[in-house]
Image (cartoon, rainbow, N blue to C red; front, side, top):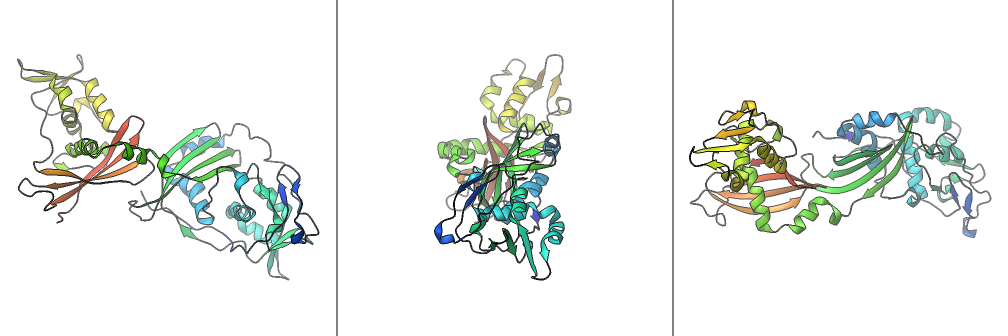
Length: 403
């Protein structure tokens, strides 16, 4: 996956002071504390356009059709660059965070707002509080904005006086781990990485966005407790022997004469057939006819085995070369299944979580005359995705010799 980068607008936000609390769509819920010495209570006008529950949105269909990279670029990466927010409900957001979200929401058209609010006499941006809350009402369904908490708030004019409303950039390395829609709501689980090769996981977060025609609400942006992730849960339950016995089966997969694979969709039908026979050898051996010296394997058994180890693949029975497929009986016939992994010493070297539902398992390999605990000839790197019905192999490759 390519690196995702983004340049967004942002302001260097000043320090905050105390004040009162205002709820969009409601009234003032708390008076200013005496220490604030505020003579006017900041007002807030709810957005008449977006304060009601949104109707069925036609736009959600467009969002559903977006590629993961576009989803991340449009809705997630900018949000992380601007504030790296962590909330399960928008009521948790503090005023300084709300002000940051206000600035973020201007990103697509901030030059228009610069012209509206820029005051040449003071060389400052003078922003009415009711315009801030109205704009926030287009991206948040409910919130408490306390303008008096900002030290750039002017109580005499009920405005925020800011030196800038733009000027921040950055980049985010992210991948979508899970994605679903429910009505107008888009739910995402996103992994964030430290490196461009997506090897070192930094954080996982979950997001919810609710779309209406012309915009969307941010409902949730919450960091995930890794103890609750599928990958961590799987590693916590699996014994080392179980890990080794399962993941070594990935070494049976290859592309032609080449060891390993980068994409399961590129594995040939013959190699997939061979893998199915080796991965579940006891099951397939029961289909051997000693009289004919042939295996009679139902196609349904082959695909059932493959489904257990791979999320996606291209198995085309008509392309079998080392076996014969009879479409009338649905049987694949062959005299042999092929060979397994290269002869040598294998051992579990390490296993780690590299994503919300991603595991990376390293197997050490040395030829038979070189004990693994003395000399490591190669490391085999296998990546798997934890699903509801087991781990699916994603890739497998062998490193350059080390030792």
